[in-house]
Image: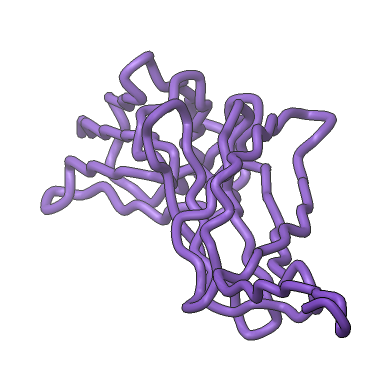
Length: 193
């Protein structure tokens, strides 16, 4: 008649543990008990009688979306213990449009990375429309860097500092790329050459 339930809650991108996520165990519409994850992202339920339950996330930390999909759990003599690792997605996003500096034409295949400090969190590449999007970013400070440019273009080396917070969950940038080629012209007087 006793269930030991372990939940580990992590950031979907960084896989770092999340403290303060609140979960509830429901039987039908009735909340039986609730717990919050500790600093290691861990929470435990004990003492549940055999039966069918729903595990629901009730509250997420600031900057994260509440995971709305309940987990159906059956506790019986064959399933007394359940362990789950559940990922939380941040609310922030960054939209990028990449264009040729001279023509304004969109550029496909430009790779960008999003960093926190020196740690690369994730990468994206621009599509045929020159667009790429980072999603699921938790509140915090990030650095957006171009990692690779298409053949014939220079990597734009200037990082962009981005803060994702309650007032600025979405950001959009149009970034220009410069070609590698150059043409040198020397103009001389036709008579004196």
